[in-house]
Image (cartoon, rainbow, N blue to C red; front, side):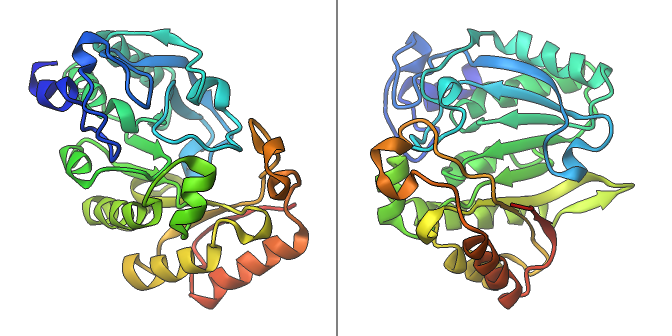
Amino acid sequence: MTNFSALLSKCSVCPRNCNVNRLKNKLGFCKIGKNPKISAYNLHFGEEPPISGTNGSGTIFFTGCNLRCVFCQNYPISQRCCGNEITVEKLAEIMITLQNQNANNINLVTPTHVVPQIIEAVLLAKNRGLKIPIVYNSGGYEKVETLKLLKGIIDIYMPDAKYSDDKMAEKYSDAKNYWEINKKTLKEMHRQVGDLQIKNGIAVKGLLIRHLVLPDNIAGSKKVFEFISKEISQKTYISIMAQYHPANRADEFPELQRKITNEEYSQVLNWADEFGLTYGWRQEL
């Protein structure tokens, strides 16, 4: 961990800057100390088509998170940190195992708070023959300085663009300045890897943005699409997700106690079309 001791000894890995000494297993917002924790790793077939492909995505689910989404569907992993602590060496070994299972890629789910550990593991794994693309599958609440450390390490960035309203982000995800930070995040990711490149049906490099449609336009979808179209690229691949359902603490918020309607989803798709964003995936309700 020596290369990243400064980042972790007064943790400044993500925008929260908790300043706790994670090398001594002091816990900040993400609840993870020196070593990463994972809940599972497997071949995953439920991602977007060029990520899963026919062989599956070699997915590693990290526990802990730097967001607190009240509607999180994976809250036992992200917020209760259910999982097992592993070493960086074990993480590298898992990557090689997944490659040996013919995974299309290594898919790092909720990686933001363990970037230093991931970098070391990827470098170890590459020395042992890791060749498949690395996917960074995150909530989009990142620190640009940390993302810059990932240049040349990450092949495919798959962030969320959750909200275009900082007040909504703070209310529902306890994330101050989410929109301002997310915009910088998306720009830096695109700067590093560009638009998504797909060869023989499989993603090899680039940016894929996910946007979950929420009831009552809580996500501020139109503004998200306007930003992507005007300041990222009209060729950006966007996965416009319709699968919201009440989970975790959603029962505490009346506006979140229902699924989205067909009309709400259709309106969001119309906004995407309005800004010329036609690349990506849309779902059936």
